[in-house]
Image 1 (tube, rainbow, N blue to C red):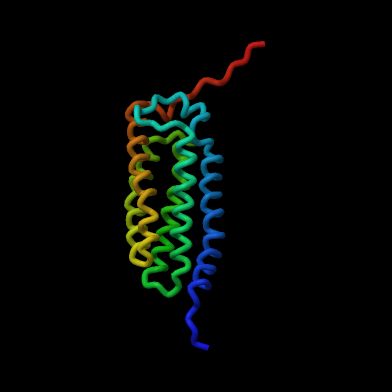
Image 2 (cartoon, rainbow, N blue to C red; image 1 turned 135 degrees about the vertical axis):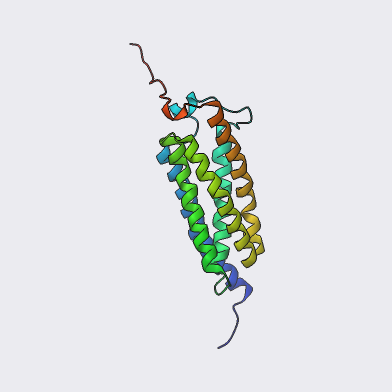
Length: 182
């Protein structure tokens, strides 16, 4: 039997990959942020001076959810592209960039290492750009799906840089504990 899979079968196979990649990648992003106590509500972060272009806190959760979904769907396309030339390298590079991505929040929000977080994101951007390029060579749409992520990383780099510039002693800043009076 030498039949090629029908379009419906191909969509179903992609859907199976997506049903795994989307919850795993979104979940990992959520866990990384939760473990790092990232965002507004973190006493250290709240005590920092923020750049004028800092979006409201809800925008980060919304943006990262969308970006992780796009990343996961693009990754599912590449996983589904069995036999595609360069697939192994594209998968490996995606996993490297995902690891770097997940390391940023603990480094910035938990360890308070603004400069090291900036260095990490400066490494992450070209890795994501190369991943998008490799994905695009396999499935054009998969490569394009990483472009919003790349653009957001560039904006995040600006925010990270500005926070470092506005708060030169950020790593040694200790936010005051909450006080209660009885």
